[in-house]
Each structure stands twice: as structure tokens, then as C-alpha cells.
Length: 352
Image (cartoon, rainbow, N blue to C red; front, side, top):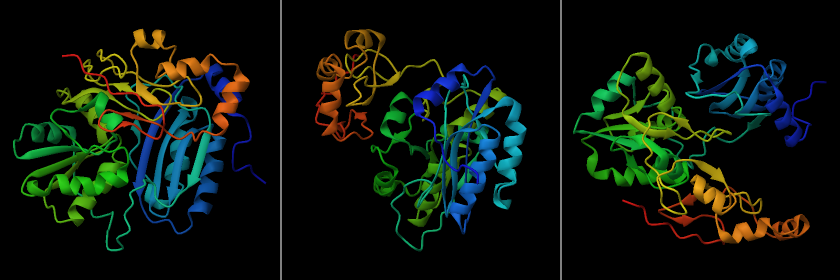
């Protein structure tokens, strides 16, 4: 009977990945389509991907698939055949190739069945996610970026927007997609006569967001085809000016792809220009935040002096402290402060 999940420790798998010499390509893809039995589909795809040594994160639901994976270059065509042949709806879907890639983005294959491929909080039975806005290619994006009757709306999280976004784009200030959808409707209530261009990293959020806006009566709704990743690829391939500034945040070990040389974010500890995301070295905290090299040295990779003191404790004492502490994904958000933790870090004053 085939193994349908990983049985090796994360530490060993990461060490194996780092020791690999074969080049890999990081790819993301998604597609909304109807799956009658997501579990059966998941198990078959897991076996197929495992055979060609695919690593990464794959979510499957009745509404479709969402994935970010790392594929050995020697097996890339095998991977394409396995994916395209797994379901008629997936034959020939767009694959977004990473903008920057050292092949070290993932070290294990995790494939999960979920209620939704992106958590949206929508419980309206009349909502149809297939009724989406108009797709925009890079040339059309640039043309609309110069149109005063067009608004660009960023449907990513705050920490993604903070390090990079389209020029003059509107941030929907939340760290969950389920909160952003109704917020976007409210924020744009007085702009129903405008062109609304929605975008995200790879297209999955903005495609559903465009359907949500249409569902709520907006008429001129567009979304960037393939998200930021595909926009940058098309713009570079066609020699177009890039209207996206800064970095494109990615959800793997790289934590970002450089799009332009602009550094539009600031260190969360001192306020100096910086757009490097890190996780706090204190395993009892693991806060995602922006830290410059000077503060990284000063705080030993920690988000605060509190965490710095804690990592200096004996390992057993650190473990005891973590036992009664809830450890979730913690994000430093300047508009909200520090989320999901009792360690309060005030937002620094940005230097002009």
C-alpha cells in the first residue's frame, strides 16, 4: 500500500533538501473547479507528485486546488504531465514560475483537503466564484494604472503590501482574506462608477475577490491575470515598465522576490529602510516581522529584548515556558500592533 503522507522529521528533510545538488524550480498554480471527492483526488495526486520528488504545499477542496511547489528540473515535464492528467479541468492550466529562485523553497510535500482552497468566510449560497471580473494582461495593467478613473486594490495581507505593491494601490488593512472581502465592499462603496482592478500574489485571491465584488453590485471589475508573479513575467518579457514597486512577498523559505530596487518598508525596531522579513529566533514567539541587519545583531535575531532574554535561558527552561504559551502565526502589523501575543512592541516612528 502506498504511503500517503510524510514519515520523516522536518529537520532531516530540510537537511536533505539543502544537500541536494540538482536544480529545482518553484511553481505556484491554482484553479477553481468542481471536485466531487477531494480525498480520492488528493491521494492520487500525492502519489504522482511523490514519484517525481515534488516538495511544497497543496490545498484541495470541492472548489478546486491551490499549490506552491518545488520541482526537480529533471522531472519538470513529468510533473506537468502528472498535474495536467490528474483531472480534465487541470489540463493546460497556467503555472506561475517564481521570479527569483534558488531551488530551496520547500523540503517536504504537504497535501491537505480543506473546506476551501482559500479561507473566505463566505456562507452565501447564491455566491458563484466562477463569475469573475475581466482578466488583465501586463500591458492592460499598465494602461489602466495611468487611468484616473481606475482604482487598484491589493487583496493581500498587510505584511505583503508593506514591502511591495502597485503604485498608488489601496490597501485593505487586514491580515485575513475573510475580513478583507466585506471591508473592500465597504471601502469602495462610493467608487462604484470607477474601474476596480484587484490583484494578489498569484491570482487566487483577486479572482475570488472580483467575483465577490460583482456579486455585490460592482460592474467594472478587473483582476490581474496570474497576479503579481505573472504580471512581472509578462512585463519583463515584453520590455514594459514595471508599475509594481518593492518586493513580492512569498510564502516559503525565501519570504520575498525582488521586483524593483525600491525599498518601501522600514525596520520594525528602528525605522530604517528595510524590507527583509524574518521570524523571531525565540521559538516561543516566532513573530514574523521586518528587521534590519543592525537590529538583527543588536537583538540576536529576536523581535524584542524580552525574547532576547528568553533565548539566553537554558533550553529546558525555554521549553517549560513554551508549554503554557499558545504559539500561532504572529504578525507585526503597524496598523494593529502585535497580533496574537502578549509581548507588546510599539510601532516605531518611520524616518522621513
